[in-house]
Length: 108
Image 1 (cartoon, one colour):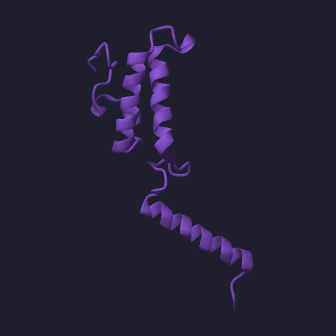
Image 2: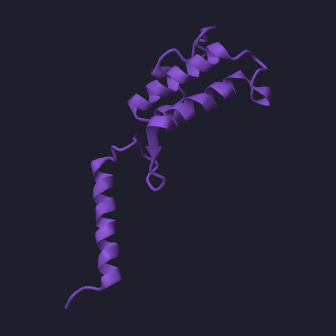
Image 3: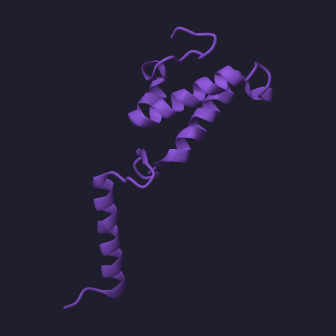
């Protein structure tokens, strides 16, 4: 990780920590990085109170991602809001059918 004074320690999405790269889709990683770098350029050390410049930049990166992406709490998968992955949509549809069937009972 080569720290650029203006952009912070991350110049490319490949520089992001594994904990971010492993959970966010590529589009969300770009949003995170852009917001992180913007915060890094904007905030002076000490301006974020006790958090520090890096913590503020990470917070802003996650907040930017959360504006466009949502996390499925059951699977941990992040996806663009309104674009649920097909396999998760099928599971959700199956759950609805199961709920209706159990609510009204199966016909004999």
